[in-house]
Length: 77
Image 1 (cartoon, rainbow, N blue to C red):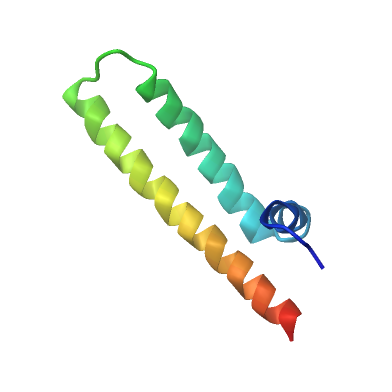
Image 2 (cartoon, rainbow, N blue to C red; image 1 turned 90 degrees about the horizontal axis):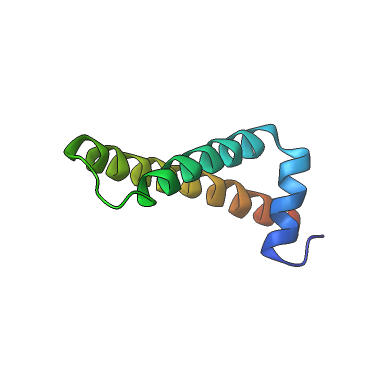
């Protein structure tokens, strides 16, 4: 059984297609967000996009955490 959160994430990346897909999406949005945050000034449209990206990233993280919790619950029993 996986000992740490990172080991569990690595295991799920290798074995769970849904988790892998969510993690890949999360990484893509993270890169887009970093590109926006690197700018010294954001337009109104960019600020709206930044807010949207943060919300989507959080939703993806919540879904990934739900998979982690489900995996832990299945493997504790």
